[in-house]
Length: 275
Length: 274
Image (cartoon, rainbow over all chains, first blue to last red; front, side, top):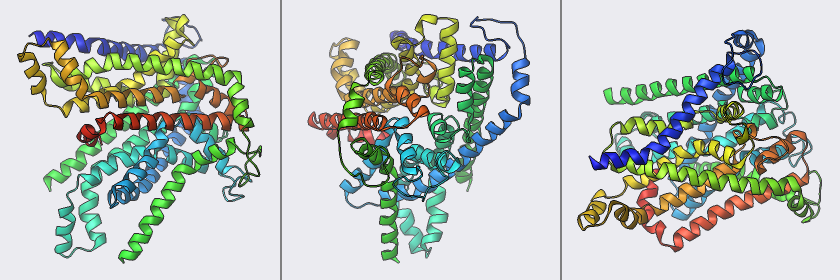
């Protein structure tokens, strides 16, 4: 009994902070998006005009489409780079090689996204170090995509590497003994067993990409606009209610993605258990 | 066949290593190059840009601001997170699953939404918190808490609870048993959580950009706002200082941990996190 009281005391401050923040976030977002004038008052008369404007504006839907498409393209590309990379690291014989490669892969997490984005701006610039190779990439979709793949790559390698490590090597050997070729072994043994890792990689990258702000803002050149940027732009134009509505949309999108992938992960692991 | 696989393997590893390091390397090279715009290998080297960046006032102010915010946010996140992680892992508590998901929930919250929400919170309830170290740090705590909880939680999960129970049986108070038995064993997790938390807060842009006026900002936000306008060697210089600083801090931590022998005992712990 004493232990339970102690536990409550230890957990209470953090939980109180989080619940307070969550409740005020939800309450304030809805309160601010359901008013039409910019006031800092805690409560204002409910007015759905802002929501009507945001939802009927073609720009909102265009931005929403760009955001989701960017998330899809970046998460698929990132996993396509990350899976072979994780496999290469896993199969490295000498420990120091694997340690060095892991350091190379994960150290960019420690460097600010702004700095990494700036690096891409310099690499992709016309008449930059690569001459005209990347002409038309910077301030267009391809530049944003490349930089985002770079930013999110470690987050895909992490779960995929963990999944590859958890596959017992005997399984591959057993399949080979039974006469399965390399491709068949990969498609029928390795890939299904590492699918949960691939899925959580895609989920993580997708979630991070749809809420990415600094990279599309600096490399999009006004041509590539995602939901996160519109919130910032609305604030700068002092349209707080619009910004609140856009924030609610982004939040709903993030939660939808979370639910979708949780269901998908359950389906994948459930399907494996049933087989 | 195996030779081909081997060649492909090394080609992929090399390509990935170049892809990952190129944007950092070009910033480092540009910051010491005499060329205003880098078009190839620099024609000469200079420390002028670094000197300009070091004496540029918005960067100086921003650096101190970022340090203060990151230190405060890390301290608060550890103070709230470590006791909670301990209680969830060790003590008899109902609804541990729910608690754990509450503590990692902020991860699913887009950072921009966090930033906007705290902005609205401050303008409507606490106008004085807008643009202050405390106000920004309190928002950053939300980003750091999930990380503190999972790192310290997995550190605790790798330990034997019987050790602390034995200390209690020998007459130690709960606090003493924790401090002398459990705390030394989770030192590695605590250091990792603190260093990573500090850097996360120091580098943060998406949330911070909503919480401060354009005049006085943290260092990454200052760089962001400058990059929105133009690119110049001074920005490269301050960026390369940030790269060097982050890697140096991480490297020093790794060396310090190895010196203290924590890496040896912490191996299992690390593997579990991976």
